[in-house]
Amino acid sequence: MNNKNIDYGKIKNNLQNYIEPNIYYCCQCGKCSAGCPAVDLYDFKPHQVISLIQSNRIDEIVNSSAIWLCLECDICSNRCPENISIAAIMNYLRVSTWQKNTKKVKNISIFYKLFVRIVQFFGRSYEPGLILGLNIGTGRFLNDFDIAVDILKKRKIKVLPEFVKGRKKISKATKKYL
Amino acid sequence: MAQETNKIAYYPGCSLNSTAIDFNISITKLLKVLGIGFKEIEDWNCCGTTPAHHTNEELSATLSARNLLLADKMGYDEILCPCVSCYNKLSHAAKMLNTSFSEMNPFEQEKKQQLVSDLKEMGFELKDSYGFKIYSILNYLFEKKELIRQKYLEISQTSGYNKSSLLAKIAPACYYGCALLRSNKLLKFDDIENPNSMEILLKDIGITSKSFQFKTECCGAIMSLTHKDLVLKLSKDILEMAYDCKANCIVVFCQLCQQNLDLRQSQINRYFKTEYKIPVLYLTQILGLALGLSEREVMLDKLFVSPNI
Ligand code: SF4
Ligand code: SF4
Image 1 (cartoon, each protein chain N blue to C red):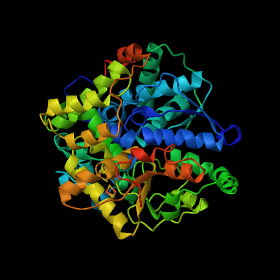
Image 2 (tube, rainbow over the protein chains, first blue to last red; image 1 turned 90 degrees about the vertical axis):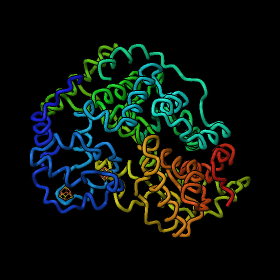
Image 3 (cartoon, rainbow over the protein chains, first blue to last red; image 1 turned 135 degrees about the vertical axis):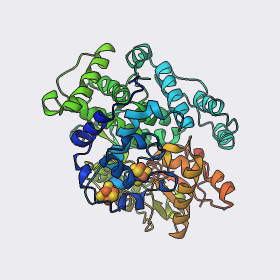
């Protein structure tokens, strides 16, 4: 997974053979994009992503923001007349190319890395550390400060982290991933 | 099997253990009232949620599978997992563990191979296949519909029963969100575009819900920390629709939806110069109240928008 040279042939092969064999049935009706709640922010719309895959232009999607803004709500897949799992395709493209995308989606990748590190260290998520780390990492120090105060007032957050007994084993077995 | 034995393993997940403590407590209290035996999975870990799932599917599967094997060690193969995000990740891992190599295609086999090797590295001994069954809170309660109805009839007829004044007043909009029903096409207990299971559960305790058009719209939950503008917009649309439908509260079963609609409601009001003030309650809080729990016991005081209707 640490290989920065993306094997587009393999991605395409996995997509059409295993992830979504129906991909060539797409008739470009656009229903997926019509229902998508995040579509206004996308550079390529969901039906365009499908079309780019069909025409072997996966490298262009890798540099797009679409796959990283997808909310995984699955409206697209449920409404597709050809039963294409668009959300599953989006997710596969994300996981198989994310190493190349980190610049384009800096804040998201900072958040994801930080979150995984915290889980590997404690075994559980630790929200105060996460929010603090995220605000420092992205330079948006006061982001969500208002609701953080609300949460503290209601005592709805654990101030101290919890440690899972098996955390060392978790960390050892998953270190190779991220 | 849960139907006969009324026993299940419980996986709260990180968020129910912290910012959604009210959801957690209202669930466990409700299960007790219903006489359902549950045991929290010992030493459970975080499922990795979106950050793991978006960056590396193997990492996500390994984190989730550890919890399943811990439940297996305790003698459970049925697991109640109220957080919808955890639910999706645990279900995915369960599918991998439940399916034997011979039934998989080469792509899946490769992933399972990796999963098995990670789990062995953590010291687990693996069986060839398992029979895990993961429940979300909604389909679990919906399966227990009869039990809930009976209990309600029984409890509401006892002499000391004091019907919560809140329950007499509410006219809720049932909001399902997108993540449970849409992403799980195999969960056939309810319709994807126009689900009805919450309305049915509420009807059984004498509450009539408003007809609500945005039942399964997405609130943007997975982008809450990274694309706030989008999330505020999507959540605002849901609040607005609830108002338009003349609902006086929103009922949910997902803490991510709940936080976007309740905790962020003040943020939405500042951002859009609106004046929404609509409480967002958990389904389990309402059922708990109907079954005789007090407002304190179901932690109504933890809601950000006060439930005084
Ligand atoms: S809804 Fe399905 S068939 Fe229509 S454009 Fe989208 S992927 Fe293609
Ligand atoms: S799953 Fe992603 S692409 Fe599909 S409708 Fe939802 S946000 Fe859009």
